[in-house]
Image 1: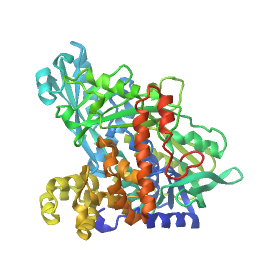
Image 2: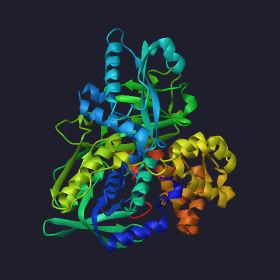
Image 3: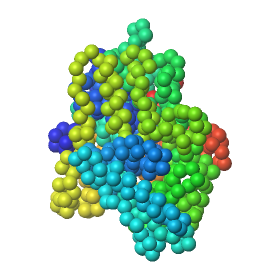
Image 4: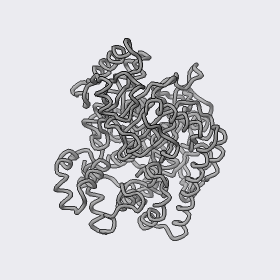
Length: 577
């Protein structure tokens, strides 16, 4: 599916049309939540021929789905828990994403596992990785990544000179995959819209429509203009992750699914701070810590601690940052300090609540429930297995519909930008010559947009000034900010700097140096006047200031209180979707 075939846009006009259409008809299904699972449900339902609407309170992927480790993986630690089915399922999904569904957004990444114990550890880790590689084969697919290999300490140091020689005795290298999590969700929503789904952000579900016990739709509030609308649907899907219990309370009672939030904190540091050609994975007392290559940066994380405070903006404390630095510095020859940290982000995992008091022991498996007629709930799981979760949720929807509906086909549906990507990648020198952009820029654009690169190049052809990089964030072109507003559903400055790009975590100024330029670029497509431009910049500045100050606090409670000092740019009432 290329730009030439008419991939749906998610611009302001399309949002208005989607809300109008949702209010004007009874849908087969309306989805609450615009994260990876909600987007997956919308795509699965639309490609089965159902009429679909999706509502998201804030920006698409603004919760957990933009704050992950950005990995597509089976979960090595689940092998130790003997959860072979979960690992096999995740690795099969990894192969699908790499090779068919989104080769432009998901790519292989190597990791080095330093060995610290002589004797037993190498055969133990080797056996686990042999099983991991074996489980990675799925019907009709190769793994999509190389198999693991054993390395001596000397060979490991050639790959990762940053490692302290005395911190390990040897290593094993294996491969997984990584993804731009927020961009993946947005691309999936564009794909769903292409197949007929109506999609809108900044539209908060504030209540349910009922006929007796049966849920017959939702009442939503357009947070951009304060107008309420009723969206009638034969089935409603709650795919709100850590907000699952809140939505259940709207319908009456806690229901069958209970979700506990676990906070994961990640640090972003410049690539030159760690001299390595490979990612690194370290075992900690509770879980694992990844050092993940990310363009001109490293992402280091994560933590795993219980979180009972504000779920919209989980705050990273000084203790979280020090914990990550302490653990990664155990193996680095040149330790990192807080001065090396460009960006920090915290996300919440939606874990199915059980008997354990430790969030690291709670289940990553998912569950689908039908608590009342007309309402389906899906929760738990992990980013990698979103498609399976979505399929199971839509199967439950189909069960509640009095009609024959085809089975899921999303294992055979490439996302927008996937088809033709490899051919364009092979032709990138020609693309560079014809567009006037450097080949490195073309590679950057292809790995973000795939065959939808045409959309960005067309913007540049209409306005050559958009071919210039943003001043202060030169990894990104000015055209990408405009494209975020015209095609990708960005409604506010924070959407563009935090999720359509990652400028907010990839620069030491955290986006403040480009805020004015980016806001002026978005103003045209979104119809902002000078006052709104000023308001967007002020809101973004306050958000960054609050985050920085929260990261100087010692406890979660102190960090959360300060982070909440930066208000939402739009009024948000009641529980978030």
